[in-house]
Image (cartoon, rainbow, N blue to C red; front, side):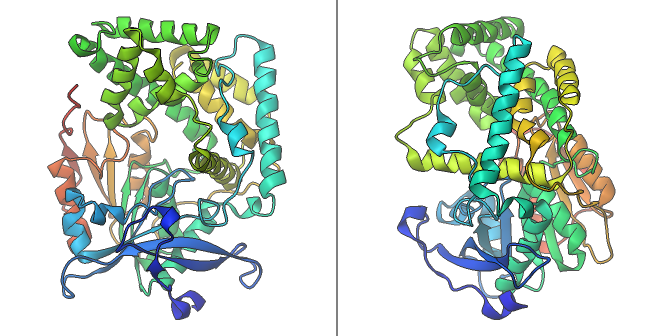
Length: 478
């Protein structure tokens, strides 16, 4: 009610934010702790651009979250200023609104370690050779968790998805909207699912794209193990494509040869980090963008191809940290801090190392690409210094309108089962599946079968009579 009365004071965005006119920026104040609504308050950064159509066409504000947890949504209005053709119809009807969730970017940002230390390379090889390697990684994870408490302890107990969903409801009110129109991608789908559960009667249109499995059993420990399996599948898709385009990349004309080349690159970097900076950990960070996004298929293969032809600099430039980019490094450290804080606080995690060791050792045998790297990234949750909650039970409650779910079949970061699970839980929802495809974030790709249905839903509220299977978008051309 306070936010609705106060609204948002829009003004030109600070130059440093890199958001061109006519995008405008403002702030929405929310309680740090919703159990004490009049206690400590924090400010959330929001931005918007007005709808481009007529007064009659306008349907309100469309709020966006790109995922993470830890991603900033502030670039969303740039889809209008950069004239992104996929969003031309929807932007006629809606103001595009982005925000930095609590803890992220400009919104009371949290931190767990000095950003320059965070990006330093080369890091330890994620794949352990010995028990001593595992002990060292466990120590690093525990130190990271302790750093979160030391640098951001006052925020940690409140860094939950449920609180971010409550923030979203305050933002809705501040925008003067009776009901929320929301587009969530990746982790943004979980935020949307929790919002839809907590505030079903406040939802007008809800699009979720590349779905985090909302089951309580999955959030978050099991979800990360499921990712390892899906990443391996998508890594195979990409290496097969690299082999099919051997005339361009010269990395092997079969998937097996390309995989052997990868293992050789990994072994070289382990023995002698490339350019003194790029070891196996840095390679995985760089190469994982290919199984994540089809848009990374060509650039990743090009860098690797150059390296194989003797140009090591291209790989160093792509995969090594740039210590002079202090703003970029601060943003990566902050993103990782929020990712960790939200996942560790949302749910109870196994505290026994035996459990982690057993599960990851078993998975690594058949799914080696990401398993151990993912394990160490999440291990701070085993010694998390703050309260861990029970996740919200995502389900349909009275008043929730039909929800549109969009998902590719071979998504690595959010495996397909997540979309099926949310579809079951949200009665009346519709599932659009992009078959034989696996790029993460489908609504941003050119695929008429998907694009037209997303437009139609946002413009008319209709989800169609049945679920739809769409043929895949075009495979990247080298």
